Length: 478
Figure 1 (cartoon, rainbow, N blue to C red):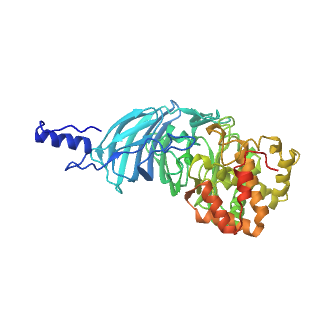
Figure 2 (figure 1 turned 90 degrees about the vertical axis):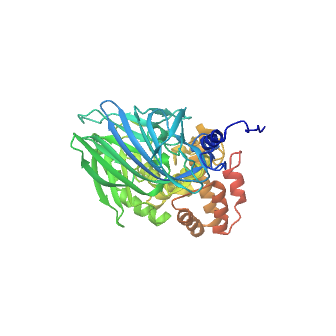
């Protein structure tokens, strides 16, 4: 870089210029811009560098009649470096104003990036508070695999007599459609989410319901608190005329279920087993990692898939599929408590949850893991309908692109990787490994390389052949 002399500038002008460009005194640069995107292998613009979020406080007001969402997001974060500016991910909604440390901050939008420039540079290690006022009609985002996420307007359900509602889903990047943040699974935070909706509606989110307060203008505010860290893609907001039931598991975990009108009869049987599933999972995988559990059954046709949103998995209409409910519950340990470091590590979510289905069946008189493993190798759909799928199309630890991170090999071949470990080390060491993995990485993030190293250390076995053939191998395993 070429340096030019500033001797002809008046001293006050020089000082003013330095203050403007560095945000500090004495001519010493305190901060630099935080990175735009974390360079995830599949979603390079997701998340942002230079800081970590500790807590989100979201105050949201939604009106199903016109579809408008108004919000205030208060984000408490810590600077990993000196920051002259930083980015938040936000899609579509209009930003009305931003403050940093209580002072108005300059900001601008480029695509899904909201760049914020505080009045003074933030120092490395500084805890700072960002407040963003925003609003508009949030949009649905279409994924690489053509599925929908973001903020999705839903029907009210059968004979509900209301204007319908909405559901927020975020895997992998849809959470930026309804609140600004650092939207990458590697940056987990605690949450307080308050949803204000018209009287007659329920508003459901993650964690525990702290209060339900009439605001005096025909609206009700629901305040939800998530004390355990959560990746932003697991946050949810559900609005509609739901029927709510509550209870507890045998060990005292609170259960909160919300079911759309018309879906009660079809979901009652399997939801009645949810407390039993929580207890079973605690026995297999270690203590349930959250203070609450539950489920939300959406109006039929409102969403094309189930999702493991933290503490309140979402289901697309009434389900009698016991293994589907078990799958999303198992994610509370694998994916939610132990979250992926990048989207390339997705098999650590889905492989474990799929294998949990096999274990549940094995323990409850169904077709166990060994028979399912053999069925996939033989293509025997009489044992498992997924056996004729493209489970062997690519290695689970290396999906070819972002549209494949939820592909069949991530689920089924991922589960088969776990079964191969079990075959190699035996049941005692395998289940010790599973419980240890969940305990030692509780409420954190982990990568595939960390798992492979952990598995070998924990079991005392050389598992290189399993990794080479089943986890990373391009050829069909046999």
